[in-house]
Image 1 (cartoon, one colour):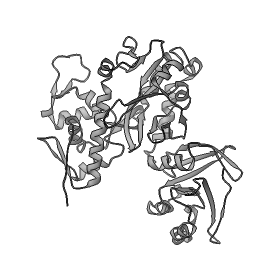
Image 2: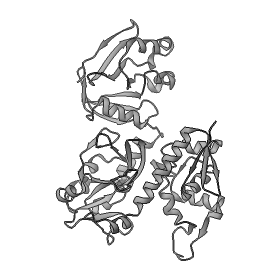
Image 3: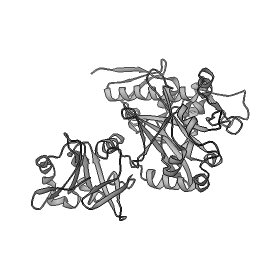
Image 4: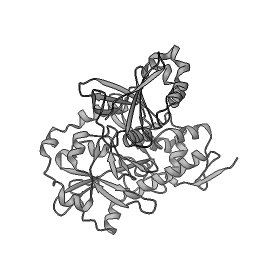
Length: 434
């Protein structure tokens, strides 16, 4: 069995090393990691002597500890802890690396800052996290970037000394949005927490600015989105599809974007969007994000949602099935099916998203009443004989949790399809869908 070796950045090594001693796979802020670092790896931590008023006195031998840890972690969501709301983070999008270290499937070399594993999938994840860290670290130094590159913007350090708020010559304001992670090779997730939180977007009309990285240039392309769209939808995460050049969120909203020059010339200035900003309340938004997106740590596989959004919805979340109009959708946090469809009459329908029809059975959804009455979408062609063979063995015992409406895409025409299955007669009919 081959052994894979990877050189990882020092601060990432430190975060990986101490992660297996943590009580949980997530951290509520960088202070959690700082405390662990001091307890477990004091040889890599020293106290700053030059800043007695420094809020967190701990530092590393290779840079500010709190700032460096902030470039290691991936935002997972917002949680309520002891009646206090707080963002929570992890190393990577999911707990795979945390679990791998805990089980000893990844071994660290403390002398050369290397990681070793005999699993190719873990090796690739380590490569990916090293790359993600490099992007966050490079993009964090926006002062250096502005010094070396003229883009028509400057920092507003008078009003925002600690936040990357930029302004143009004509007082159009932008807030740099933080890169979170690559969901797939071609989809980037951005963290909107800093944009949505607090009162800064009430005080100034600021448009979100997204830096699209490439392997050769972490500042490869800059796009901006009109602030009124984000204030209207208030997503915790926004995604950028590299192949289709589209920004979207997990409610299926698609966001038109501008290059930076067009944004400076066409978007509203710092005094714009007054009515939207006056009605914006971060505490209300925060409560909604906690309850709807994070409550039960329900993660929809981003690529499954992405496939549904691109292949079935074709970037338009509204569609008609028989006489019912679907007018909205939202990723579910209920612990059951992935998506909730909302009809024009106000009724709702749960929908499970899978790559293949058989995955519904493999994942054991047929055993749980949380999937009772759910529809099923899979990113493969409709095939009644295949579907019948997959679900027939479970019908007699689990009929309530076996889907009877299946959504798919025609492989030739690429049009959306829907089929109703009558499990009593073992027949099906094609539904009208538009």
